Length: 193
Image (tube, rainbow, N blue to C red; front, side, top):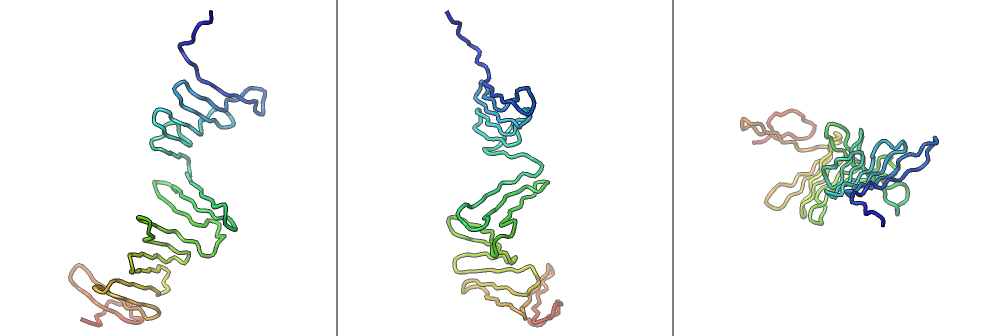
């Protein structure tokens, strides 16, 4: 009579690498964890933690549903039904810095980064460096390239400011000082009270 095995073992898959010795490629542990190893068979680069239902890329201790760990962790999103290479990326550039990348190879001429809330676009960063903040019929456009072009629209109870080559400038400080400047004046000399 065949004896029942009360101690289930890990299920391991090997393949023959460049040498003659078998290399561990995959392992299903007796607790349900699944590991995919690198081509040397010594690093679990892709790990499924069955007890927490978490996936680790570059880590065997995933602390979130998806945990990516590397020296330059990047998620690449590529659109398959556009001409060119419609690529966007999310990247950790070090020290916890987050970088959102739209069209990293500059294949398109007018890429944007868009932010939606409750199904409605609320903010957009354009390829020209403009930051557009939208709220209903209001639009705020900010340009940080010293091109002196901007728009500020609000509702009827607020202010509408149009600035092109002769902007209107407003200054205020914590002493209660307020000043307006016009045209090419870049000082804080009072022009209106």
